[in-house]
Length: 144
Image (cartoon, rainbow, N blue to C red; front, side):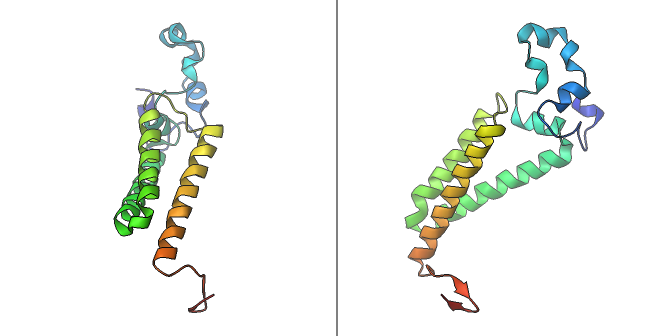
C-alpha cells in the first residue's frame, strides 16, 4: 500500500528511508510486533520496491537473473567447473530464499555474499580457462 505512492522510483535508497518517509514508526500494529519493525519491510524484494522503486527492483532482478544464467552456463560448460557452478547456484538460491523473510543483504552480510560469489565465479572461470588451454593472459592477440 505504501509503495504505491512512489511506485517508479521509490522513497529513496537506504534500509530505514521508507520507514522515515512513510512515518511507519507511529503504526500501532507494527509497534505491537516489535519496536523496530517499522524500520524496513522484512522481504528483500519488497524492500527494493519501497526504496528504489520498480526501476531499482527491476535492476536487482536483472542482476540476479544474469548471475543465475552465468552459473548455469558454467554448469553446462566444462565438468571441471561443475562443483563451483553448483556452489554458485546454491549460494544464490539460499540467499534469495533466506531474504524472503527478512532483508539481510546489508552491511556485513552483503559484503560476505558478494565476496563469496565473486570468489566462486573467479575460481570457476579460472578453472574453465585452465582446462580449455587459455590459462595465460591475452596480450595483443597472443598469449602471455
